[in-house]
Structures are given as C-alpha cells and as structure tokens.
Length: 342
Image (cartoon, rainbow, N blue to C red; front, side, top):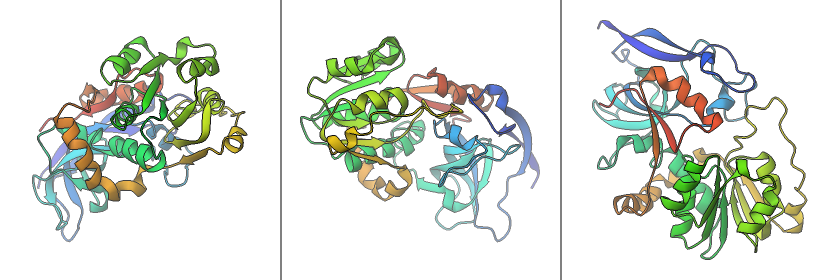
C-alpha cells in the first residue's frame, strides 16, 4: 500500500497561560492506509473533530489524574466522528461510522478501545456526535439528572450556558419543569438563551459588577441546582445564594484553566450551613447510560423540543484558531472542526 499525505495539528510545546494559535502547528505527515498484519487497531478517516475546554488541561506539562498530557511534536487528541476504512477488530467493519477519541489529523490508526460507540442513528447531523449526541450531551445528561437530582419547580442556574454542555442543561431543566437562568459572555449569547433555548432568564456576566446582587435579582428564593462550568468569582457568588440541600454538579472551571495562580473561593462555609452537595465528575463513568440517554434525547431532537447550536470551522488548518477561541468565548455554541464531510 502506498503512503498518503496526512495533514495533522501538533502541539509545539507545553502551554503556560492562555493558549495561542502559534502553540500549535499544522504539518503534513504520512500514513499507510492499512491496518498492520495481526493488529486489532482500527484505521479511521476523521470527519468532525470536537473542540472542548478540557483540552487546555492536556496542554500543560503538569498532568492531572485521569487526564494525562499531550506530547509536544505529536498530534492533539480529542473526541471526533470518523468513518472506518479498515478494521483489525471484529466489532468494527469498513464504512462503519463511529465516535470516540481520535487524533487531530485526516487519517488515524487507533486502538479499538478508543472508539466509544458505533453510530446507529444517521437521520440527525453527524456532527451532533461531537456534541449533543456525544460527550457534551452525555455530560449534560449525567451531570444534571444523576448528580443534580432535579425536581419539578426547582430553581436552576447554569454558567457558560450557551456552550456545548450548558445549552443542553438548560433545556433538560425546562423539560423537567424547573425555572432556569443562565449566564454567558455576550449579548448574542444571552439572546440565544432566552429566545432559542427557552431559558426563563439570562445575563451577560461581563456587564454585572456585583454577581451576588444579580443572582439575588434572578433567584429571590435562592438556587436549588447550580450547574458549574466556570468556577472563580461566579462560584463564590453562587455559594451565597444556594438554598438548603442544594446541589452543585461540578463539570468544568473554564475561568481557571489558563491562570498560573488559580483564584481562591471564599464562601465555602455555605456548603455546611446549607447542607449543599457539591460533586465533581467526569463523563467517563456514565457512558453505561448512553443507550438510555439516546432514548431520552433523540425523540426530543426529532420533535424540535431540544435544539442545538454549533459553531463550525471548516478545515483542519482552522482547528487551532477554533480551539483557542473557546477560552475567549469567541465561539457561539458547540465548536466543531470539519475535517471532511464524507
């Protein structure tokens, strides 16, 4: 088999502070489109790649338990939707569509264990498997229902509410009969929350000088569930406004990932006074619920009861800018990179 060109996005070096496009290079590698004899790896053609906030953590030299680090000079890895070109594993065959962990390149040879699921439902956009039907969707579902334990009539606050996960948490909360308010970083995003996703209220945190007062305005009776995506000053203000027996599923802390010195949180004593349950989670331990999740969400998507907004970047060479844009809030909705549409 002849070698073919394989465009790749590689990390130049470990990142300190805010990532820049120049921290990554688009290079041309080579790959033989053949699974090695006797290997049970799977050869993929990558179609859609997912830009996710956690990827910043992997760019640091210091690795965190369960996360690891990228290797400078090697392609980034992340969630993606791919087509099987050849398989050494009995569970996958040529032309299967799959989603899971792949590399930021045109073609990848990956261990079969990195593939999470075969894609069975193709009446919805394939890119949805990087978002609403992939890791972010599962994250919203598990974090909100399994950790948040919502009840009808409860008050829910979501930060980074127009992002890949937040936009779903808000809609799941509305479907449950909750009162929902979200925060985001621009007027356009706030409008989206109120007018498209059906949030009861939304505000631009950049325009609020006193977050504690803002939250009291939107939640005069306090917050039952805070879906945490940002950390920092927002978390501190929320702790003052939680209700007795409130729940805080901790999904992300995007305000902290690029700081060399993380911000402190001063209102943690409220966890005691109000008997709040605050629990961090990663989505990996909830994938056993994936078929149950699809049964829940697919009918809502098909009926237009759950909507999803994507921000699409065309071409692998535009991947670095798309990824870096997450940390300045440039994206509107789920950030996807299209490598190939077929």
